[in-house]
Length: 243
Image (cartoon, rainbow, N blue to C red; front, side, top):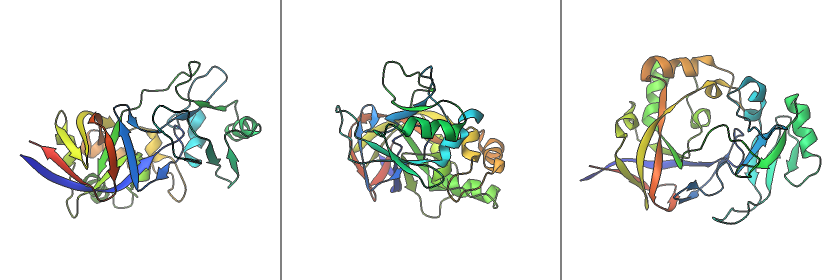
């Protein structure tokens, strides 16, 4: 029998790998994941994709990205707008963008379509990264001075679990669940890295974020899931774990 485990409280899409993303009212899922998620990457001259977990790319998490039109499954990606941490905004078809990226990184960088044949992806993205408010509450209780918010951990779906606190999704591994009309299966724990400690927006640098996850939940915060029945998830949709 299916049991209700939470309600969708936040939905996130990340147009550019390692940049801050878009908070949205709905997300379309295909078997490959969120349409448009991490559709672009910042790469170096060799095509190596950058991730803000690495020191040479850490500036990326201070930048924001948004699509200028809604991406569609199977279609070319729409233009993306990048807002740098100094407030400068540039669109992906601006010929000056590569130089602007390079100056801010202190090394050569350019925007590229992640699935382009010359791009070497730093890792293969999961179809869905899911996190619960219960886990954030548990971490916050262990380290009250830390700001445990979804932006630190970059989920696609945040489930609100009321007053519940605890690492509940770690027990969902290899189980199936439905989030609104979308069916998925939890396949892997999400092990965290230094990216969670980086400053971004109003969030300060805080090594205690990662240390707390390591000390209290074996460095696990959230789960990765595969999509078995595609569809559109909306804020307020109910999530159920299938027993």
